[in-house]
Length: 391
Image (cartoon, rainbow, N blue to C red; front, side, top):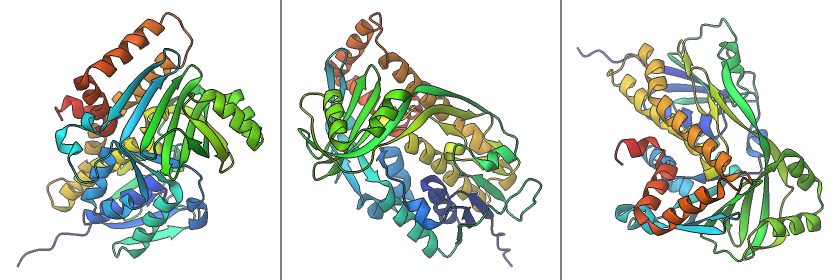
């Protein structure tokens, strides 16, 4: 008589994009999952923002069988224009910089952009429909300090101010950048609908992300006071300020929502697990939004947890060893990504004339050397650790 393996159970605290995907990944690995969030669905859906998705996120979604559905709500961009407005050097990244295999794949793209509401709508629908997932929204988290719930794994995916992390007494290393980040939807002329822009300006990086039909999401980094001022401007005055910040070829026509500013910080938890609890996504780390790394870094957490959860469900990894194994595997990617984004901000968000020759040389080499562009794009789309693995 063959003994059946015991069902592994997980609790996920937080049902934002990362928490929702974590629950789906654990269920795909064969676990029973309870996911809880104190916010109701209407609040979880209401964020006005967009995300950039890279190939590391695409791979995870393909493994979970979610890519066709998610791809339907995303807008691909097939070129990325990197422009340093201080040196006037421009570096175009295109499909060829992905390598021949990826460039020839159906629907090839340098990356994708998607808005929060359609993405969260899809994820919440999948959570509700999955037979191995219990979704509890609008209720307090079921964990309190000292609880001993019947779960083999607890996932804290409850954001940068994570109550779960604080209840465990896990400290963080963090500092706030002098910049804030302002987001807005605008109608623009002068850019193709499949073209994204990363503008390097002395006051901070500025991403212009295509959403189709001439609509673009702005992710505008600037000093906090400047962002507050921009946030308070009327539509006409905001568009005038925007026109002055964009390169001449990009012309704003209309503001489509209310600009919103939020602080930007670097955060890293001092440890990624305690007991049977693991920190996933922004409960464990945050980085500057330059290069669109934030959500993709969070989802690489999910990809690692998914692989380990499958091994545990198959009996190839003792479940009590899973949290420590997760932490060991995530540290290199987290440290390299946070270091890389921080260095980019410090190198390009300044007016130091001593750094201008270095910036000019770096961008000149990028523009001239295709292998260097391929390496840079690989680090951005797959994570810097993939370069060390030779991928």
